[in-house]
Length: 615
Image (tube, rainbow, N blue to C red):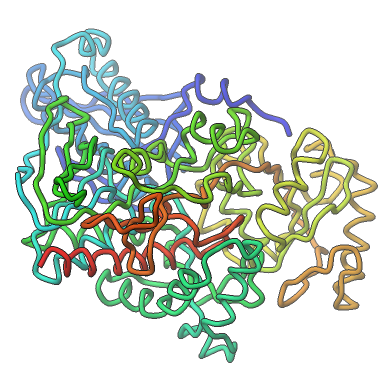
């Protein structure tokens, strides 16, 4: 693969851009995704009202160009407006809102980046700086001014019925469910933005018997999903927990639709290990479709307090070992506090971004493997629960996702053409080496054994047109193409040479594949897709990819009621867990799209049972 190294990419000013149109402290997101900023340019300043001048700072991001208009009146910034941006709703746009308020309130550029959207924050700062320089201001002098902290106006209560720790999909499901039961609820997250790994995901959700399957005549049942999940995890998962996930899938999807207001595409995907197409897709093909709407829903509930920039540090217990509260610390001010409560739900996610913890349980998952996960995935909930006697289970099972950016570790959603029965995976020698719809761990391990540990996904314009993924993820595609992660060419030879793949062998592989498609079978790797599609007419696309840590199957040992167990398999009164923080559901390997099914099913179970316990 040609392109910058990861270090060059980041150090060269690759920073996330902005979301929506924002004036003062308001943003309106246009699309999704983190942007990368480099080579800022600024338009000439323009005169407005008396004493007022404006200028636009421009950046090229991972998700396209973005403009930031800055208005200065008599030497003071009075407005910052983000223009033409493709930022992840609920992430980058929120970061821009917070930073805008801090900049204007303090008349300084000496403000913090926002945790969870650091790259977006840096790009925003660069764009604002370039606009100020165009106006004749000295942006370096603005950065040396007095520090201004952004502080939330949310008042954290000292007591609540239920505290939910971690505002990803599982956390929102638990908190909204408990609040709907009439309980006072606090939902807290240590990051400056909400959504966690759910917001970074594609949001696809395995739902047997869903409405799209019905209209397409696809026969499916929860029992079939149970079988696929258990076999896909080498039968190491708890069958009872798996059955709860599968049987709750359709109800969870309906809850997201009617309670959360989530919209869905009229299409299905088939992930590796699933024997049928059963995964529904959010309308934006992004988990942020879920988390932004669930954030809005949570903020509209009077008895639910949503708190960011607040890290839970300790679980409090009484003499009987029951959980009675949570200690916390502001990640902005350092202020410490405590919430006394009747029940706690941990929805803090996994530990995929904590290399030390990964290596502790699985030495192979060292710093040489990048991660798709949020920086928040540090295993905080596991440590807090373990400190009061909770049991951890299956911690050695850590999954890598096979089709990730070789430079950054980010998920490559353009690569989902593979999951819609298009494209083949080849190595540098131009040969197929694995079944494209195999289990994630199988494909990942196969890629690791190839030359340089890199694979290449080849597909044609037919695949791009029929899936629409290059349009849906145009921002990702443009950035990947600019860095040489993906190349486009009129011939197979052209794309092969650009990526350093053997052209003649790749051509022979494609001809062989097309023959298999005509015959309807794959004697080499037993392709399991519901259909086989040829690769015939250009333009052709060849995308480099390698595995990155994506999910940790291990976690807290829970009951079917989402109660957390001790090492002696006794229930810890008042403590519940849902989502990736809870283990023993996926076995050795999680099938794609089952995480969303899990977090919303067990999230609602945990919220309901915590609410009942707190009665």
